[in-house]
Amino acid sequence: NAGVTQTPKFQVLKTGQSMTLQCAQDMNHNSMYWYRQDPGMGLRLIYYSASEGTTDKGEVPNGYNVSRLNKREFSLRLESAAPSQTSVYFCASSGGGASGGRYTQYFGPGTRLTVL
Amino acid sequence: TQLLEQSPQFLSIQEGENLTVYCNSSSVFSSLQWYRQEPGEGPVLLVTVVTGGEVKKLKRLTFQFGDARKDSSLHITAAQPGDTGLYLCAGAPLGNTPLVFGKGTRLSVIA
Image (cartoon, rainbow over all chains, first blue to last red; front, side, top):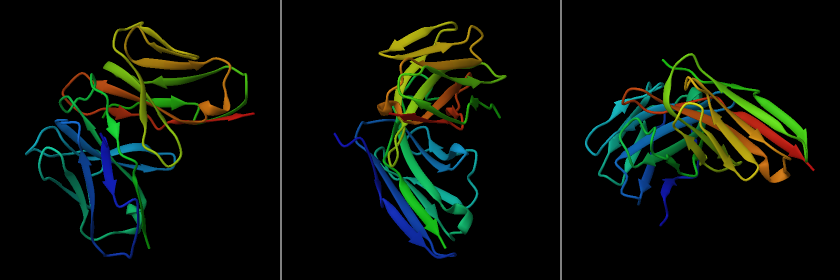
């Protein structure tokens, strides 16, 4: 059981470049999430998917798109990277619905992205 | 938007000291979770509290959910260097919406 895996672990982009962050979970969870973590800002939700086939915006969705490819995989795309998107990105999954309140969120190890 | 305020933001203490971290909101949550995050890793769940007034103990860590389900505290007794990390509280809103995270308390325990 690998839990939640994320690729890549590190990435450096130039302003305007695009990239996709990949996330996969092997726990048969319904819900998946993408967060960004910046110093002093805690975890901020970018997008989430309460179930396969649905996606919803979180607190900071601008500049990002997501795809729930199947129950296991949830990708995050930056179409035109900006320096303000320099951050650590975490993917998480949980067994319940979007509330996640009664269910543990399991996090991946993170992707450290720098946009120059 | 529901907010969770954590305090203090930073805490540096000597090994063996006690400490308390607070998580406060003006909103009611159906449950509250505490996570710990170590450098270079994702957060890991420590505990979930569900009932107002609930107290849960995990070895030297004591978690309490406020009677009104608007606040929570984490108390660590006799802190050890292994307790060093970022502690995050997260509240589950009453509706079917995702968890709301506090900004975290960064704890450093010096040997």
